[in-house]
Image (cartoon, rainbow, N blue to C red):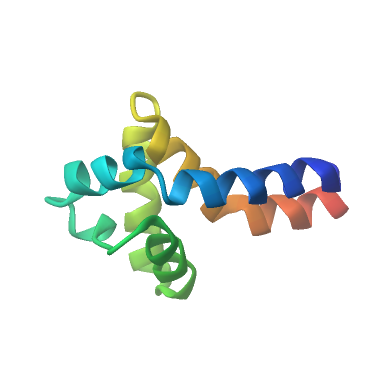
Length: 90
């Protein structure tokens, strides 16, 4: 991916993270401990700081929802963005 694509993802994220869909998703995900967070920014920050086992649980929970939940898919993309950027540079 080129830099403009990552810049567009960053701009999009600020809108997604503060949307009503984000609030609704967090409410839907409340029963899942791996997805517990006050907002989507916190969820991604917690994921990046988590142990490998906890991060894997969070990624699995997001991936399991991503095919039917666009917010989960977008959070998953945001969480994987640093690694994708590194791959893109190679």
